[in-house]
Image (cartoon, rainbow, N blue to C red; front, top):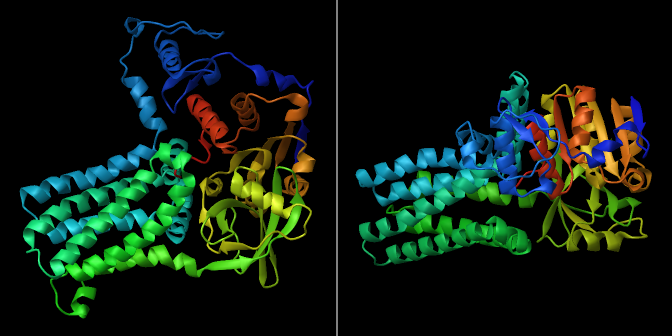
Length: 498
């Protein structure tokens, strides 16, 4: 283990102001790497194309616009980059690939309404299962060791697909609503509207309305501006939709006996949806965390629960059983029959700010409700490599400490960029000293804010690591991942709806 603490006079400080364009590759496709802060997206694309296809080696930043006539290669290469970069939409393509042909077949062969209903329920079941903590844990446990047997590029994309599985969640939800939209008119035409058929049609319309509200609230612009509304709609409208689905399946069934209805695939799949949604609420633990370290912007809380936290996972906590927030498991300690997890709560909004304020000057934090099953995240992918670079800014080191503690990877190097590291989290330093192969503390108060992408590239090349794992704020993570993708450096971080 070696320590590297930066100071303003060090040789690599020039990365804080590096502006040069550097040649890179997107896993086989060479493109130019540019500074996104210095130009718009349109100019950035033109510069990338010009650098790639004109054959000019640029040593300084150039921002002049060019004509399309200057291109020597078709625009398809830029599309290839966009396709490789955004894997979330690939799941939508997969969902459409099996749903669209079935829609065509359904109308060509005039399928009865029950087939439309069954396909809608199947899509909704997929929607729910890919957000189930146990299913995700099984998926990560199986696929991450499998990735170790693959070459670097297929492994990277396999892990990225798993990390972007939220695309399967949202794509299947939309497909389920489409099938439901087709089912309602077919059912209305097929069945005489009298008695139970009217109730079945009304319940189907209410189910469609609930699902539509959930999908609309999940659109990125609305989700970001009205996040609390999104959370509440997903929870309460989701619960109502599951109840409405069960009611509709029972009422709409032509079978007379309840036993016959229960044995139908429609009811069995609907029951699986209900169990997957509601079982987690029976595994909630109420505890009073102890405050391990308090800072103006963050607080470390030790949670004693009846279920062990796992490295590379996130635990969801709440103060009122309504609003839940995920936090990466930082440190895990097993003491006799109790299992202690440490989470780092950083001031990122009203909820976290109030929790930090209420814990100030106290040995114990306010009571919290904790979900005992922790969901795996992108840090779980560390297990698929032999040599990695862990990058964190501020309190983002928290979820990486549990990975270090568990020794999930044989060789781990750490780059921690923050102000006054020992004040933010003194408990983290012993873990870094004992578990990290090498670690570097970059103090932004002394050295200023660095160019993170250049700094990470430098350490990646020095340590010859196989992949980079970044934990930072949303904007920084996105920019770092984009820049490293330009360079062909395998990089993982928290992505939209991952």
